[in-house]
Every structure is written in C-alpha cells, then in structure tokens.
Image 1 (spheres, rainbow, N blue to C red):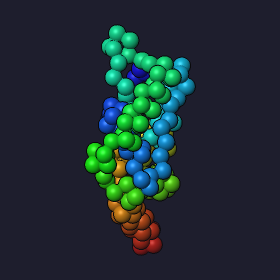
Image 2 (image 1 turned 180 degrees about the vertical axis):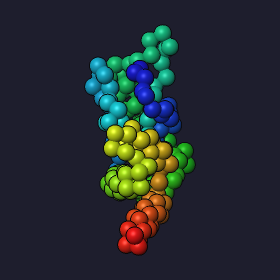
Image 3 (image 1 turned 90 degrees about the vertical axis):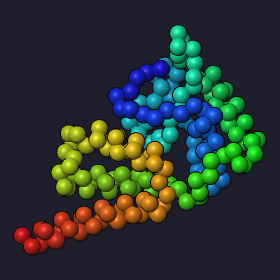
Image 4 (image 1 turned 180 degrees about the horizontal axis):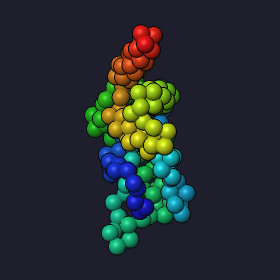
Amino acid sequence: ARSRTLPTHFEAPREALPWLIEENLSSALIFGPEDRGLSNSELNFAQRFLTIPANPDYPSLNLAQAVAVCAYELHLAAIAPATQITEENSDDLASIDLLEGYYEHLERTLLKIRYLFPHTAVSRMEKFRRIFNRAALSREELAMLRGILRQVEWSLQQETIQD
C-alpha cells in the first residue's frame, strides 16, 4: 500500500462498509486504478477510508480481490440484523454537496482572515476535510459551523466600514 502524506484513520471493511448501506444515505465505494490507487486530491472527497488487512510480506491486493472482499463484507452487512448497523441518524447527515459548499466557504473565510495563504491553502484544506469528514457532521452541525463563518465575515465587514 502506498504511504500518504496526511495521517488518515483507516477502518477494516467490516467496520466501515455497513455505513454505505444505511437508508437514505447516498454513498459510493471508490477504488482507484490498480497500479497507483487514488490520488491525494481524489481522496479529499472521501469521508471514510478503509484498508484490507493482508499479509505484511505482501501488503497489497489487486483491484479484483479488493472489490471482492468489499462486496462480500457489504453482503454480510446487508443480511445482518439492523441492530448491528451503527445508527447515526443517517438521514440527518450532511450531504456531500452541503459539505463541499462548507469547505469552499471555510477556505474563502480562512483566506480572508489570513489563516490560510494561497500557497498553503490546498494542503491545509486537505487536513480540514479529513477532520470534518471523520466527524460525520449532521446538517444541523454544518449549519452551525456555517453560521460561525457568516459571523466572521460580517465582523470583518463591520471593521472595514468603521476604518
């Protein structure tokens, strides 16, 4: 397996995959090209990461093997009693579109207050994405975070008017 520059929380398929089949949750399981996997920029759109435990002497599987393992684990999750699936009010989770809007808003705001600079924005935003994706934010939580950003923007505007 290829090493990554950003620390990422990896889960085993049995832990991560039941989340994909929860009701009212639009989701996908994405595999990268067999020879190199997904790029870091493609991984920015992922909300969860999994790794398939393998022999340390040969730590990678080919794409077909990885798909087969994940399909099998999804099948097991689908036939398992509903009580085994983690219930986090999946219908209340923020959608990918809402999250992307938040990330754009966060980046604009952090650039305005000079926490981010154009030359560091991409790597810093990757880290923020990992934090917030791991949190599995609800729509209400995301609305609260966006409210903070709007208040920061309003405050900056007031300072500009007073100067």
